[in-house]
Length: 310
Image 1 (tube, rainbow, N blue to C red):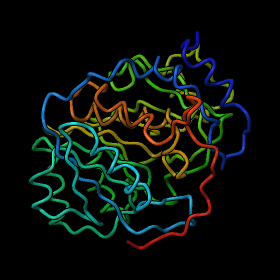
Image 2: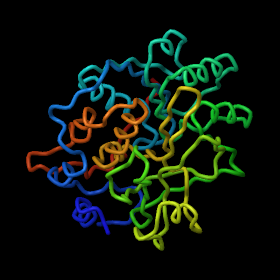
Image 3: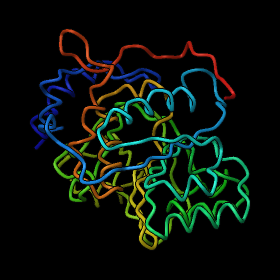
Image 4: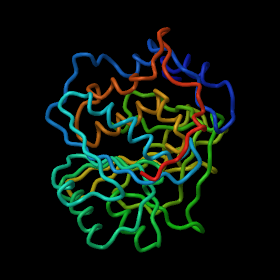
């Protein structure tokens, strides 16, 4: 049975199967059934977030690393008890030392052994990470294995790993038995992109997978994940030492970050990584994308953007 709050959202979202199109805006009243009451919510401690970004490398509207940093850093700063610093291409040791959570959305530059050692120590000592889309790709393969040690999953190589766009015809299934997505619908639909068949460390738990039109919500998440044609590693969790990582291979298009349901998944991941209740981050789901009629989201494909190097 579908989550009651998502039935209307599906009816609105399933307008076009085209990959490069955002979902239609959805009613705030329906989203509130998924976010819960959050006006009085607060974090249990001060949180220092470090946002890692790099030069943009696609046409406008795709891999807009700087644009997304400029969107989310101000949103995060509005959350009481949250402070945010920024790093370009790779953090300094001083930034690692101060950060509680590293959020990375970039095409990874060359990372030295010394830098990888700093990254792995950050995680193992209790640092938290949220890794988005192409942040899991680095070459060559020896670098990829080191990156997987830090975040759980990484690109195995063009001959072994795979990528593809997916449309609303292919549901994104969530493991709602995992705390990160507990209480959410069993599936959500987007037009975006994901990677799969990547290096995966033993401590990784895949919690999101792009299904096929043949998959249904009557199946368990494990059944979906093991079905033919399903693309795993859309979302995962990972622990290493004292650290926690929430990763996703989705987040290709800029309009996806203006989708309230996608924002909901990201803030749930942020909260899980920090071992905080998610309510304090829920204002981000609605901020800047709610109109005067109470509809939340965007109709803009956002493809008219000019990339920047920094």
